[in-house]
Length: 400
Image 1 (cartoon, rainbow, N blue to C red):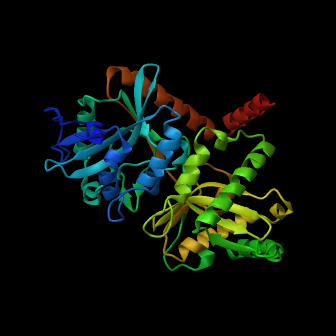
Image 2: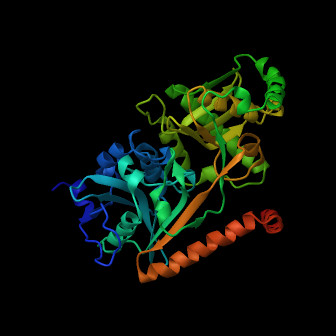
Image 3: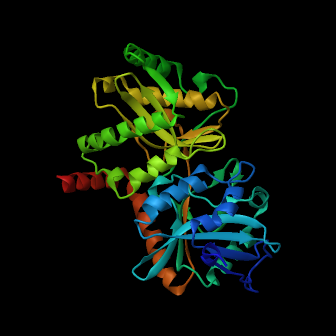
């Protein structure tokens, strides 16, 4: 037996006889090593199956290597299979211990806008309550179990299919996600109005006078490195000017982003794609995110601290990105969870996101209830203007 094989903790557990409807899920395996789960993982992330680009192996392997390990999170990869041992879904989680409670949560942390299992498409299309109940029952009976599942920031639907995890008890996440839906074949003015386009073109004329001005999607390794070098120089300065903490300074974050931006995909893209406005003298604006052939989802951005910032380079870049993906047949685009003003200029819809906190043990029941209550309180503050203003004033006072 190899060391990798030895790292797989596998146990077939029978669903409780009291469980409702018979499930196609007959067993679960828990992998405690990323590489051991990789073959199944890559098979389930293929376009003909169902998953978000935030759950790609290359994205989460880079995150776990550089960030998860620093947060004392160990892989807890759940693979559910049918009676013939054919994988039906993979839950890419990590396990942490907090005050004696084992909490399994999606890998990717705050860098993954959406979380979801990787599904075999035909199973996701027909999965019912009995299937998800059996999954939880099998996890409760597994030798390598956690106390609670913290399954946060899940979309209700992906690629026009419902997320079967919504059949579990769930609640609204703290924030929804601003969404732009792109109608196939619709004119450009259907996604960005004529008046807004004219305003941006007027501003862009100032930038077009710069030597070497261009918009592009970085493909070359040298371009990716140059743009990220500029990002990690500009972003901390911009956040400091806004009196915000530099979240990119946390251990492993820069290494994760550099690794994921360099990880090639079979379609010629990368685990994280970088779009930029640039001239010969500087990087003017940068937006980076993930794409899967149907949807682009933004992760992080910044723009220059120079005088060129007066001409709204971030908005100009966003217009270019929207047109880029619309011309390639994408059906939607999001700018990440949150209600920042610039997002609402482009994204007119709100996509609901949900959380589930599922206890797997008596100890986990207390933790699940506490986490659920905390999210409800945060959502109440976020969606109550008076409470939000109080929270912002308190945050400002604490930063002085």
